[in-house]
Image (spheres, rainbow, N blue to C red):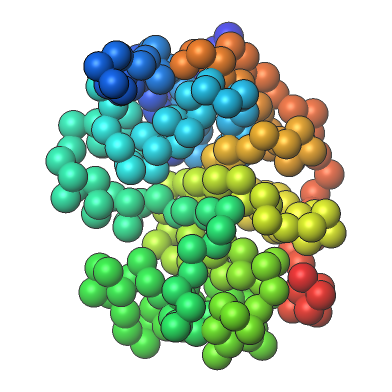
Length: 252
């Protein structure tokens, strides 16, 4: 199979022989045993695998929440596997957009303020970035919820805030961890349609999921077992999605 790097495609991220060992009760657990993976810009990848397959470990490494035991992890052209904790923290804040199952919003902050959080930690909040946050809120269908706090929003609306927040730094990719796990089927479909639309606009998405109906939205599905990639297969092309509007989100 021809790789993206062989065709000259720009990489959002690239893993080369990535390994991760843990020592538990005096025994070494090899969570990842040499994972190599390329994610070109504009790709949409679903990562799947049973419990103990290594997908949570891979998620932590992709999100720069942990460091590998061996191997390289290139974010763009930078090998972040060689960075220290402080440098990794800066990468997390400026180069990766996170969307979690539990939303991870700050309850005391409004919608706009939650979207601004990554900018705040970099000292980049100003009138221009505030306008960008307003635009992102409108893009995810929350133009009429700017001053609301998380407790005043439904689960679907909170996840829309999290998606807008993940985009505020124009990241290399969005890393979504079971992003629809707390949502009902109708709201799940709306959030997945939003992810589809973002990908159609060129956004790179890496989604960790255990649900086949969620992974079906991705362009390719990577399956892990026992710390190794056992398959990396394309999905059939999907139909173009419609970006959910503010009116669509009222019931979400």
